[in-house]
Image 1 (cartoon, rainbow, N blue to C red):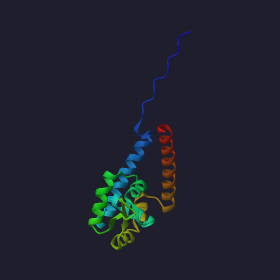
Image 2: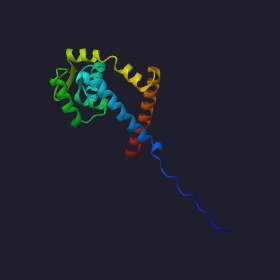
Image 3: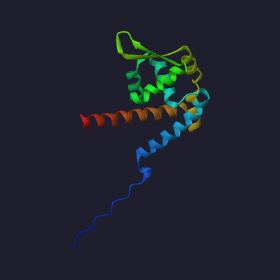
Length: 156
């Protein structure tokens, strides 16, 4: 009997990589948000900061960073720019001088209110209905949570 040859491994294809699909989608949505936010003189990360402060109220810089998965090297200059625009205030926590509390100003709240139609514009541009977009977001949150758990389990 002659030994059986093993089949050659199948080549890896880019369209089979979830990481590439997520990367391509993220870059496309970054560009979409950049276009939608440009008339308001906001970047996408600045928009996210306004949203998280609008939904949660005043937060420490560390809490904002954790909520948005941003490190302090990225977040500090971003918050300084928002404060310079008068959209957020940054104040030392009287109970702990090491902590800086960030909150929306009135102008920040007005700007956030003016951006209320952005999610609908994103849905329309993506060719999805709001319910379809919500299902996609739920799927992405679930898979991100599962991957986070896997990473924690391997590193712990």
